[in-house]
Image (cartoon, rainbow, N blue to C red; front, side, top):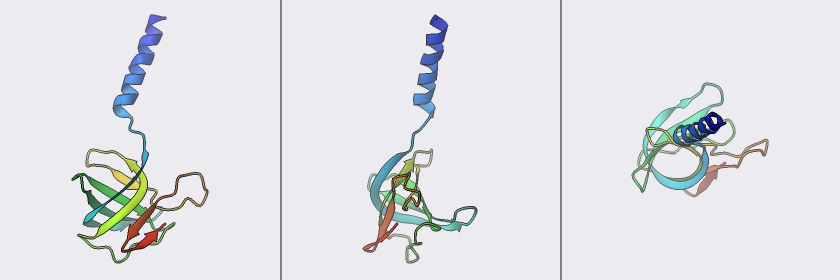
Length: 117
């Protein structure tokens, strides 16, 4: 019985250490780099932003479900709300659009007074 509890304890430690759960994040920052659109599968507009904290994030905005932000350029300020996943480079934000199935929290981008959702 002791071995069973030890295994459970080790699994909990492993999970807390290595599994990063995604969470909803709303923030804003300045665009530091525009990346080419990802046209494999669902198409995504991709760019990197820097938050006021200094942290950088990759934003992957699904342009099959929400309008593309065509006027976006380096240095521009943008607000966002989406699902955040941590990684070694700072993190990624996706789900910056509505969910047509209404099973996921909807997100958005806001640029120059317009909301893209």
